[in-house]
Image (cartoon, rainbow, N blue to C red; front, top):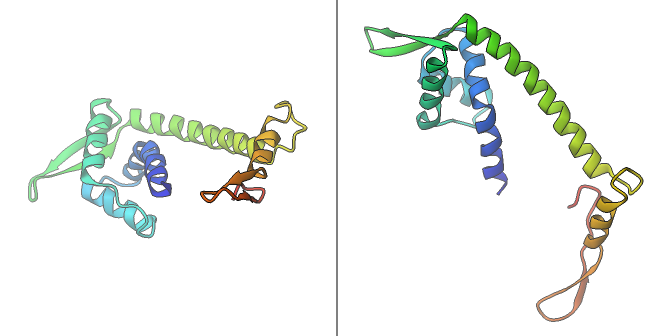
Length: 149
């Protein structure tokens, strides 16, 4: 489950990451994959099936342009002026989104029953402390720490 969640989160940011990489130097799709793998220390290697559709989308929206290199018949992508403006906008939105998500996570995980939620989160947490019937009919209390573990 954790790997699937990480993969989904990465996909959301992939267009931004691709555009950011291309901004620093014109490059081709395979190099983008290698850069992401290296910068993530091997934790993430996007597939060609996820990179090339993003490159096509960015190009069709005028954010990047491609030039075919004759010796290898590879496309080298570079960012356009429109792409730089879009990247700046995406950077600002990314920062706002991360700040907003951080605030939401903090509110939800640090609620002690005294906030505007009327104690709903505390009530949910208290359910974790309730005895739970096991498969043999005995009661067992599930203890969790402040992080729900």
